[in-house]
Length: 281
Image (cartoon, rainbow, N blue to C red; front, side, top):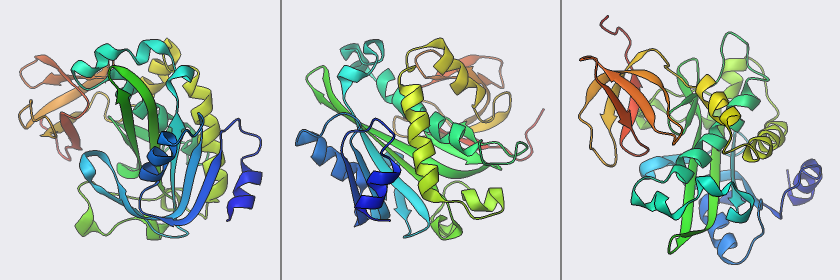
């Protein structure tokens, strides 16, 4: 792949400018600098290899050359639903952050479920991972840049493990991982995969604030109805405990039922979910 081939591949999508790199530190960092310099809405940064990528809470996300997809899309607020981007979001984890993260995860899910076996569907592990066969194969990192209480731009970064070399060794994992080719059982053209993810992302971006979007998100939610372990994350406002996943609230928070029967809400950045192999009934 090179710049000319990528431009040709994505020519039918209404993107802004496109930049391709054989190797980068982080596509999100490049996209942020480009956005500050005035890059238009839907400008795209794509890299064959990413050596200093990151996920949520600054966890490492490395993309091996020729084996995965790493790309970041610049989103300008004037082309996003206003109700998801109010300045009131800044009192806590913003609903815009949660919705845009779900946008990336849903686009990846919809794409993968076009190639994965029906009995092994991709699902969204709230709030920002995509899993199949109970293992992670993609992650989403959204970063927002504010001027006062006004959103200047968002950078939506996506990393997908496509071939086996893209899967980190077990010693570097905090959740089991896999790749698309391992689940599908055959080689996958990662550039066609990129086109399909972007196409789905554009489709769902126009529906971000709709009930249809929320229903699609809910329908792809991993562990729904199952018991999971809640691991305190950044905010650590919730103790380590077990809970049953009920569903998604309109603001993107997660509804959970504790063993006591009490229903609680977890917000973006508060907890991570871990499956329980042999849950108590």
